[in-house]
Amino acid sequence: MKKTQLYLLALVIAAIGLGAFYYKWRVLNFPIRATEQTELWEVQARVQFQARKGPNKVTLQIPRDPPGYDVIDEKFVARNYGMNIVPGKRTRAVQWQYRSARGNQALYYRATVYRDQHPADYIDPPPLPAKPGVYEEPYLTARTTVLESVRERSVDSASFAGELIRSLAEPAGDGNVALLMERVKSLEQRAHLAKSLLADRQISARVIHGLPLTQTDATVSLMPFLQVWDGEAQRWDTISADNGVEGWPEEMFLWSISQKPVLEVEGNPRARLEFAVQSTLDDALEVAKARLEAKDKNLVAYSLLNLPLQTQDVYRILLMMPIGAFLMLLLRNVVGIKTFGTFMPVLVALAFRETRLLPGVILFLTVVSLGLLVRFYLERLRLLLVPRLTAVLILVVFLMAMVSVVSNKLGIDQGLSIALFPIVIMTMTIERMSIAWEERGAAFALKEGIGTLIVAILAYLVMSVDWLEHVIFVFPELLLVLFALTLLIGRYSGYRISELFRFRALATDPVEPVPPKAG
Image 1: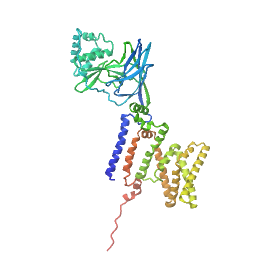
Image 2: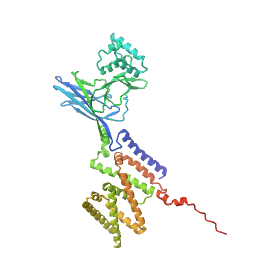
Image 3: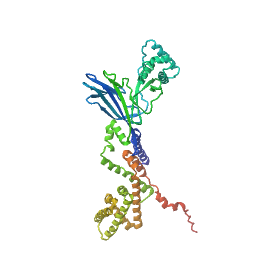
Image 4: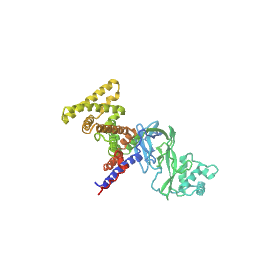
């Protein structure tokens, strides 16, 4: 395979891994820290009314895809009531019905709200042209005068609506405004009055409702907002019905853009709607998982997060093995550290995770040292390879059992974890180390043995990082990046770092020229 093809393959694989990681991190909001928490809001809407004789039907507008937030859980609490969800264009409502309700009734809608990355501005298609109403005097003159006064203080539809709201908020000193506001008792009515005034100037407007999310437990009310259509920019501009300030507040949760009343109870205009908001903190990973389940259960069903907890714990360890193997690759192929076996240091590092580092090193040195002594004695017996390996294996198991018994007697709990050491790998290490000792000398065997232990210790230190374990488990696609780097290192055939130190004399000492022979 040509190097260009290898580089392109590695680039594609790394791009896939990084792209999947970025999507899960920034779009799906999976946390990169195990202890990361996210803020949730428990929102409750309580409908209370006195039931009338005969059938009772209640309609409550509820959120649908609110910008800047996401609803990850919903509950509808209404005893004995039938319920159905009525979807609309950018709207959604719940309908409760009961044929023979009596007395005081209380219905609840509860939602768990989570902040996400949706844009703050809510965009809708262009509305139908606004149609002016028909009004009698003196209201017609008052409306015209107020609109002309506001027009002089504005430059576009958004500023026009803002100035109009501010004029309606201060009726004192202006008889025309006071006349228009004489029947207005709430912000809701003020917003609808501003909407009808804007229609006189053929400015399309609508009244929407938002719910402020507070940091502490609180009883809150829906806030009306006026939205006017900007024909040039092709967007809705949001204006506060309270003070005429333009823009959607950051801590405001869009409840509904429906032009129908938020609450409708047939035959009962005195029904009450109350809201309560509670802010809590929860584990960011669990919140992201719940958010995915609310949108598409398959996104979680085919992931590690849906495995049983015991299996998840196993994969948290297994997914760290490629990290240790990649570190060993760097230390062997780039640095130049010699080891016994290819993956034996990684397996020993896994055992260190249970025994901890210092007790694990002591156990490793103890078993290998005693195994070598017996292995040298077996060499004098002239045994064949398979019987010799079987004898060493039996010896290794026996030594592990003896060390565990002694450790238990001395009250050293770490010694009980020696059984987690890879027995076959330990057996092969003893065999290979003894052969290297005989064929190439004690120095060479000890050098590779020390190199094996160094790599195992470094792999243990890296594989024991809690943050790294969390990231690899939540974002296993990052292993594709390691795979791509492994492909690139696989074609590296240059000097190792240890060789640069080994042969540094050749680079510094000048080579004296050989004098020509005398003729």
